[in-house]
Length: 209
Image 1: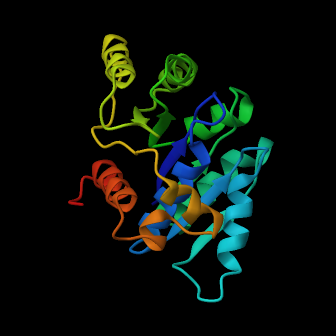
Image 2 (image 1 turned 90 degrees about the horizontal axis):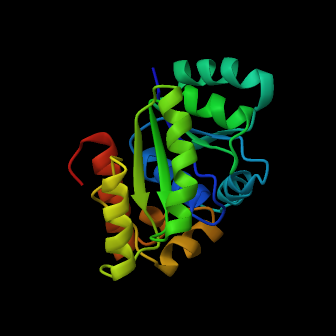
């Protein structure tokens, strides 16, 4: 029975699809992984198409883009066939977003260290709370230390929200890997970006990075 991870965030540009792709790619080396793209922009579909067209095939990731009234049944089917299902959800709180969150074992919310990202995340947190789904926030494109980062971390703590200890920096390696259909752990395994992603995976799975 698969673990379902839904990546959700109302605010565009927070790195939602990039995070979903990198989680799937990092886990595909050792698990049967599927991605479910219910974001109408379908950036994950494009990434997966590039991945499938690579001359040397990376670890397999199955792709699905069912949405609407068929979503619940499709997710149940995928749970029975894979070890992990990663959902890239819409950047708005619509019916598909609610169903994607309702079906999750864990909801991950990426946010850049800025108040607008946190404000947008609160709507997703509220929706996950209504569905009784566990939520973790992930700082993305963040400097190692800054006053703004510290302020956002304090605001997250004041809201009583769970913030992952591992963070993702503002690194070109993520975009470069995404552009060629890979995760950063595949494209640049010795990079700082890959180390950050492995730390994220370790925190999600409880395994040693």
